[in-house]
Length: 148
Image: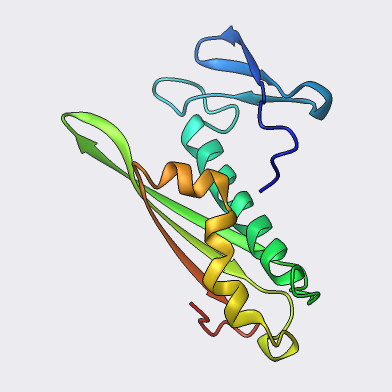
């Protein structure tokens, strides 16, 4: 969304097995690991980190798009499910399904339809990932009704 800092860096260091210490610099560290039987499952694996990145970026993009119209989406929440499949005998993420839930009722946001029509384009991560993975997005009102 922002082009103020177009370059970024994250460093990783092997702890043991398949567990890595991921260093985000000023933003702290995170331990990742592969699930058993390869690893010990002592942290999120790269697929889950990718899913978190997609969901986070879409939620932030939705908030940004709504706030452009000086409206308040409330406390937006997100859920994402991924599906692995074998392609050429290798596991690949085939699909991600994202569900974003607005914190405020749609009728409090007169420009919501316009925001919904454009917010996905603001998401750098999703638009990059979509070049290889199908990403489906659903936006729901606080009452659970589907908006997109």
